[in-house]
Image (cartoon, rainbow, N blue to C red):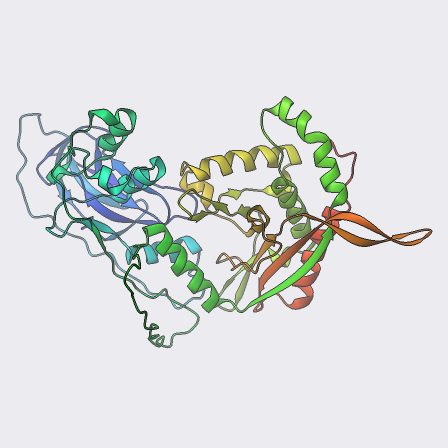
Amino acid sequence: MAEKPILMPKMGESIAEATVIRWLKNVGEKVEKDEPLVEIATDKVDSEIPSTEAGILVKQLYKDGDVVKVGEPVAYIDADASAGASAPVSTPTPVVAETIVSPVAMAQTIENEISQIAQNHVTQMVNSDGGRFYSPLVLNIARAEGISMSTLETIPGTGKDGRVTKSDILNFVNNPIAAAPVASAPAPVVNTQVAQPTAAVSTETAKVESKPAISINAGDEIIEMDRVRKLIADHMVMSKRVSPHVTSFVEADVTNLVNWRNRVKDSFKKREGENITFTPIFIQAIAKAIKDFPMINVSIDGDKIIKKKNVNVGMAVAQANGNLIVPVIKNADTMNLLGITRTVNDLAARARINKLTPDEIQGGTYTVTNVGSFGNVMGTPVINQPQVAIMAVGAIRKKPAVIETEYGDVIAIRHMMYLSHSYDHRVVDGGLGGMFVRKVADYLEQWDMNTEI
């Protein structure tokens, strides 16, 4: 019998592990090549591991909820087994993964930090009678396609115990009329285990925080958080615990920039078939300022500062379900404005429909969030760990401003905006944090009206 391993695949830069959500095949079952074998989850991306061999599944090395490192075997397939042969059914032998709990503050990389959180937030959705299971992958597709839970319950499942598979829900999306109704069931509830994120700045045991008492009155609606919202919540709380936040503000006169964009946007749209927004310009200015102040482009590992070589700027994008995702423009300092614009438009469009790959949301060294898109003039953003700074750009508004001329001061209507820069006071002092945001404002204010794109 030739047993061949099925390995945990690499799913993106810096993703070192994934959580087993649910096995799709049992020991002893026949498996075709490329047939989904097991569902897995990282912080924001759920997927299935296909079998790289055809044969009989003879060993499952991990149980549901276990964390598996990239490159490790998760199962073994007997590739020599004939189609009619039946492999001996044995009890799966779970392998207990060695867990090393590190007190280091930034947990080496934020991907490992979030993966540890994800281990404690594996969500299983069942009804009160212990019925249907919906995998995170299926739920993500349902949310993206606007399929309600009541509609999801009517989709016939071809998986184990009537489970709705990825193929089932995609078939429903393509042909919703063909879905036959099933017996109604009570609304599903979410069983979750909530664990406090590791502050990881001391070896001392963290104190258990008491939760405020919440009164629930008639008519109040209780809404369960989805898995991504739980991860965002944990990540934000962890960031505030780990980093002492300070925020500096600068008001910038971006009249030249606004007038330039108004002049070129129609011709750009006609030539390129897409819009030019202010976001690529903000990212270009931030990348230039990082080259001027490279100590903004760092992370902290205990008492060590890691100075990043690459300038990878993340941009926060709001999805239709209200969650945020941060695709990353890699090596933004090496790209011209046209390259940044194309990359920003592509990533933002796919982020809103949950079509990003794991690698496209990893490796950021600095983040920008556009609160102006919601009509806000400024904000105090929370640092995206393990980075040490983040900038919020506010709405651009016409305001009266004092302009210095050779003939004296005059009041004129100008396009003004606020930049808010939050930074980690452990390594970024007020001088550096303030000079950095001022430099970004200078690049925006000194925009050349003759810039070609």
